[in-house]
Length: 209
Image (cartoon, rainbow, N blue to C red):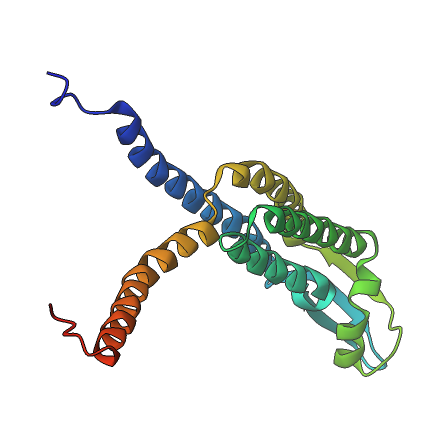
């Protein structure tokens, strides 16, 4: 009876590893989703400008990549940090999560700057369109910077959430270390056998015996 009874501890250990791996995968996908959406939200028009040139009024559509280029850069940095999270150790994960949260805060600050002064954020694009510096006009903000502001806050929250969730993730470096040790074990044994056979031949003995 005792020999046929399965050991619950072994089964629990085998099922816990896939659950942890699946949880890390889902968390990584969620971590990629939020800054990815923030990057996409920076592509459409953020400000509709109607600038006055020397001859006529010139309509200018300013995308988020020009109104707030920091949003694009920081969202890409957050995406890269989330990808690096899976191959990082426990201590480095904390640093990476702090980078993700800081990127979200920086994105939010850049968006707020555009919302507070859309004319200043559109100055470069308007100057290129009208060939004038400091052209007067009207500026209307679209819904996209507001959406990006929400996603920036969500990116900062995601960094904190990943910091808490990644504490239970399996460290990949240990798995690779165990695998390399198992792979190196047969080679080490074969090398020792070669040395013993050479010593036997040197002493005039038959190594096959």
